[in-house]
Amino acid sequence: MRAYMTGYGYELLAAKLEKIEAQRKEALHRAGKAAAEDSNAWHDNFDYEQGMRDHDLYASMLGNVLSLLQGAVPVAAPVDDESIRLGHLVRYFDSGRNEEREVILGGHGECLVFANVVACTSPLGKALIGAEEDELRTVELPGRSVVVNILSVRAARREDYQVKDVELVE
Image (cartoon, rainbow, N blue to C red; front, side, top):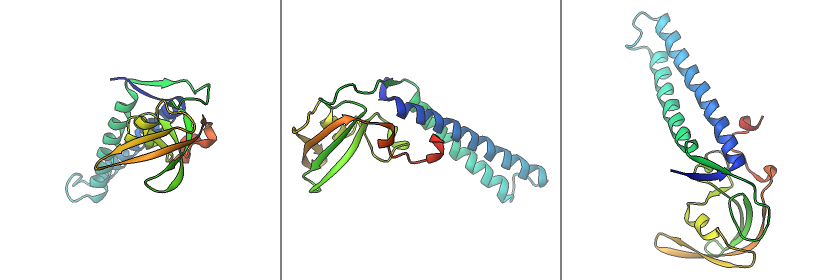
């Protein structure tokens, strides 16, 4: 299945994949070291068991990120600031919360690496796609609807993204 995402999101998810793989290998190494130091390696050996639990956790995380990247199609940064598409920074007024908010429209899964990205597949993301400045859009939520007023639209810059794990950009 094709999944579109910003180029920066794709880049950081790939970096996250590498980081998780390193953590998985390190957990396996710890389990192996604990097993080598204790002849009763797999029974009542906390360090071994914890290493294996960590390994299983990282293996699961690895599978999740890998599934996001497989079939992912990075899209070019927007060149105009008219209608909203992936990679736009959108400032809007949320009538449901009675507050102004700012988000970047991104692809499915980019929320793993960015705190301020809303997925284009979410109810808000679906409502924002194609909207223009000063336009009202209705966001359909379970049991209610919320109207958002688009205040401004521009192409997001790297410094606009709130990266959750700063080690990924270093």
